[in-house]
Length: 275
Length: 259
Ligand code: HEM
Ligand code: SF4
Ligand code: FES
Image (cartoon, rainbow over all chains, first blue to last red; front, side, top):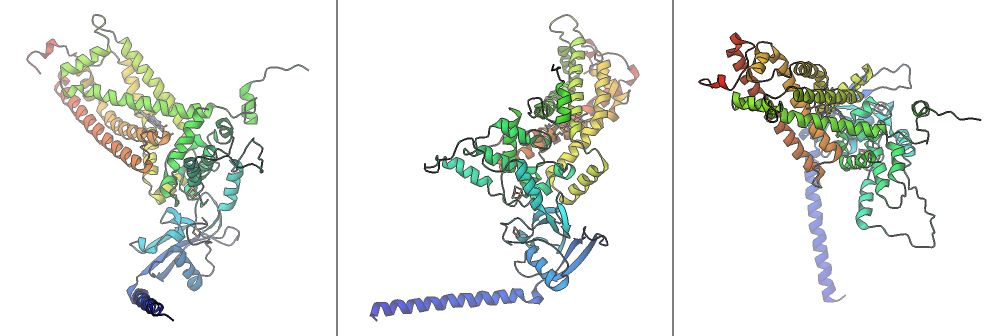
């Protein structure tokens, strides 16, 4: 081994030592924070009801538990299920704000449980309810899937093109700006929070919802889709579609993906009123 | 086989589409007209406020505004017909706007319960603003109609004394307080909603534009309420002082020595 190699090896070892120190320190901090004495007790109240069981009656159940650092509602509910009530139902898949499974009313506001910190609630009291407008499965678990499938079928949520695709040829290029705009709207995770936030949807079951209008805007913008505004009018040109929207904008304010629902709905409204 | 002309409406009401199997364009027209009538009424309300508050400057000024509406600059003495026509137009638009707005009200117990519970739980400001809008809108059915009918049948009786007598001696002030509150909230929220509904004044940053619009809406409500209250007080004062001479009309000459 050469001298220079020796020196660099030593340096690396030193660096590793430094990293180990940092890790040890942060572990200590974490341990201290995790220590039961430092943390507060929080109360999570949840609706419990199983519509498929004729003997089940809706009730509110309180769960008291110790808050841990960085605790999300996902973590809290998992803890409740593991230690307090294994019969409580709620949905999670990704626990990272990607799958859209964990929407619920948190102190009345529709949001994703896995993206909600319990520390955001100063009072330490959190009331959970299932998302309205969707079919209740049990407790906090609702069926957004069937609703979203029907929405997709209703707005024909796919590229409709009159042009024959010739796979031997290179695809027509799309302006990067336009592509970005389409991808932006594709970020929707179908969590249903916009629908559960919407007073129109709450009152009128057949309303297509911001998620549906956003989807139509996505294909309207996409140059691959050859549907005209007249075609889109056939999908959303009524009071269950774009003209049912009363611009209450809770969709915009609650969407966990911060999609620009207001602008897109206004855009589609301008298009549709001019058809 | 012979074909009879089929009634378009029968086809649409049974099949859900027009004869060409297309969706009706009517919902689009109605949505547009809801906004257009709302905009007309809101802009009218702003000018209306400016005209009636002319009393805050002087009785003479208010009289000259009234006379201008009676087109006295065109012919001697003026005429109440243009005033009558103007009020009729506003009344018609008002009724049409209310008719269109009916489509949006919660119309049965379940809708009402769901809206109320949901908005109470969610505490979302724009949703609450909408509830203020339909509540004041509902009040306007009655308050607005009474006022418009009164003015329609009194289109010749507008002026510093005539109006003040109506406010004070005819007890219209009670109605006007409620009408003022209802209209100013409803109109300002309505203009805000129009802007976000159609995407007006969007500077590219929709959230920031909306914040700004909301501030403008707030300022507008406050300014209009203040101006309205001051105007109402001014008429009350004149009406109170003029109660002994109820029915007497103000003329420029009666101005001499009494301003
Ligand atoms: C009988 C009286 C009235 C009733 C029942 C009524 C009702 C309503 C309702 C329910 C809406 C909401 C519509 C929607 O969400 O699409 C609305 C919108 C509106 N109203 Fe009225 N209103 C009345 C009178 C007035 C008056 C006097 C004004 C003028 C100050 C006015 C200005 C507006 C505006 C600007 C909008 C927004 C239009 C839109 O959202 O498209 N309304 N009205
Ligand atoms: S638009 Fe936003 S709130 Fe609505 S389903 Fe998609 S991600 Fe959820
Ligand atoms: S668990 Fe996937 S979004 Fe919350």
